Amino acid sequence: MNRAIVVSVLLASTPFAMACEKSGADTKNEVSQAQQNANRQIGQANAQATQAQAQADQAIASAQLDFMQLRENYRHKMQGNLDALDKSIADLNAEAMTVPAKKSALQSTLPGIRAQRDAFVRDFRTLDDTNMATFDGTKARLDKEWSDLKTAVDKMS
Image (cartoon, rainbow, N blue to C red; front, side):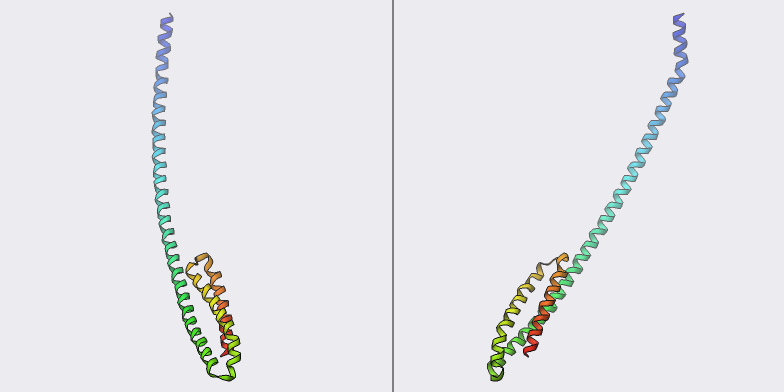
């Protein structure tokens, strides 16, 4: 009788074992599909991130190029201004040598103007070392120094 009970229990549990196995296969298939979807989404996200990084790199390179051009244009403009100022200072120096009426005033003022010019040139040389973050401050300082220097020379002319 025990044998009959054991056989009946085995026969009765066989469909449950098959049902569990089928459910496991379905679950495995669902997990596999979920993993494939996740991998596809990860691939798409990586492609988007790579594209965004490339666009950001291009924008950075463009901004750096624009900044270098802006800095070079400003440097060129200020160098031209400095060259013209040097000519004016040379003219004042010549005038101090040849015009007795202005000689004492020019001789007393020219050393201060030259010192002011030398200070401007020292600061002007730092322009090549400026970056995007410091350029506005450097430019404002140079513009102020230039304005003061130009005013001093114009007063003597």
